[in-house]
Length: 106
Figure 1 (cartoon, helix red, strand yellow):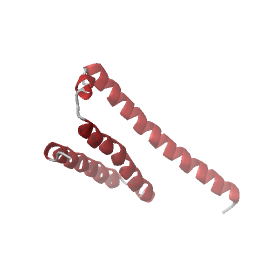
Figure 2 (tube, one colour):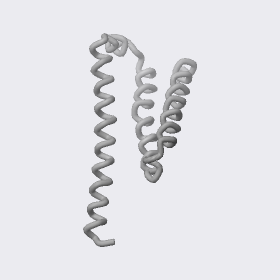
Figure 3 (cartoon, one colour):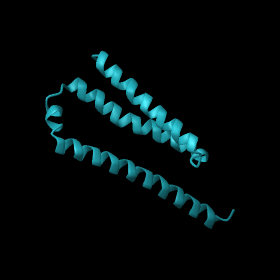
Figure 4 (cartoon, helix red, strand yellow):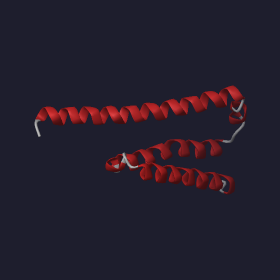
């Protein structure tokens, strides 16, 4: 493989990762704006520091975890089953965290 093809491949791979990051950031922004407009932000002002730390951990580590899985299984990106399983795991992951947030105090 020539060095031009490797550089082009790296560029398009990086561009793909940046596009995925921008899509996730856009979705997060839209969810945040909708929560702000709905008045949900008033509830956030009255939460404890412990609750805020739990949600911050979920908001930071969930995308990082799933980004790593998506990156490692790049060969499976074209498979519809891969995305359905990953979506199901994301739902289970978030559901488990929500249950633990409800019953674990610290």
